[in-house]
Image 1 (cartoon, rainbow, N blue to C red):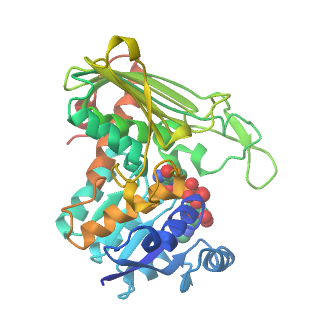
Image 2 (cartoon, rainbow, N blue to C red):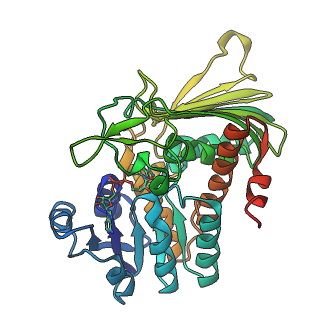
Amino acid sequence: MKSLNFAVIGGGFMGKAHSIALASFAMYAWPAPAMLNRELIVEANDQLAEESQVRFGYNRKSTSWMEAVEDPTIDVIDVLLPNSMHYDVVLAAVAAGKHVICEKPLALDSITARAMADAAEKAGVVNQVGFNWRLTPAVQLAKKLISEGAIGEIREFRGKWLGEFFNDPSVPLVWRFKKDQAGSGALGDIGSHVIDFAHFLVGDIEEVLAIQHTYVDKRPLLSGSGMGDVDVDDSTSFMLKFNSGATGYIDASWSAPGHKSDAGFEIRGSEGAISFTWERMSELQYYSGKDSSDRQGFRTILVGPPHPYGDLFWPVPGYQISYSDTKVIQLFDFAQAVTGQIARPQTTFRDGLKSTLVEEAVIASAKSNTWTSVESADAKRGK
Ligand SMILES: NC(=O)c1ccc[n+]([C@@H]2O[C@H](COP(=O)([O-])OP(=O)(O)OC[C@H]3O[C@@H](n4cnc5c(N)ncnc54)[C@H](O)[C@@H]3O)[C@@H](O)[C@H]2O)c1
């Protein structure tokens, strides 16, 4: 069986998620497309590298991502760094002929996102962006139902990613609150997953009309003394028009009291509707207008082996999918592409670029207070 040596770059939140998924991969995905080895972990300094190696179970550690890229025994570079660092690592990895996974948002802007997608495609390496949320079995089932016409013609998309984790002004000024390191705030960090839901389930977005807010504009510096400026959005909401003629609305906020990880959508069609929230990620709500009138109502489908990717987990429906399970699915998709079982992963750098183009249009629209076309946001940058 093929074996792939992973170098994981960054041992933070996503370092944990990807490491759990790598460790449990073949226990779930069996027969595995390939064995995925936790070969090398790279962190910012010796102490973090040491801790990450011990905690996440890697054979080796390093403080140099370039060392990982240049290492001939490494097959895959898995980029789990703050957003501003994705570009350099991905470009170097692709130039070295490595297969690459990169977390979302792919890049700070569409120029760099496009360069990353172009470079990976030219090099012929497998490239995947971390839009794992769409790979959730319930979301994949939603796609299947829509494709089969189960809710008729799609009319409206209502998407959201609502949490309250940064409503607390005492949360320090980490990279996520700085435009030069993150690109944007709630929009790119969490809204990008909803934009991806919209692309995946409904289609390409043509125009947006947006409003953005920053509610906490100063946060304690990480050094422990003084305050620093936040220059990204805490909340972004926008209306959108799809190429298909369907319309939509997306609400992304990390300052939404009462919500934890309320990421999802309601999709309304001519003959039914589908509703999903990540807070109940093993469930899909489906309403069919074709049910007889005395029993109409949303029905709850609990995902399991009959559903897309559901058979990777437990033999019994309703055993619940969890966050790191979606990373197992992401790795399964990636490993299948590397071993030629599928042409490419479902979520490539092109999907990362598409989302970045929408994010740019949203930011431009919020500034100009006008409907802004997604293409013109691209054209403005001279492409
Ligand atoms: N797909 C998802 O559901 C999801 C969820 C959260 C974050 N993300 C994305 O994952 C990426 C990482 O986010 P995170 O939440 O893990 O951030 P984090 O801050 O928790 O982790 C980043 C890690 O990178 C390390 N690092 C910094 N400089 C480094 C260097 N030069 N070499 C090696 N390591 C270095 C830091 O020490 C830190 O441990 C971001 O792009 C983020 O948007 C995706």
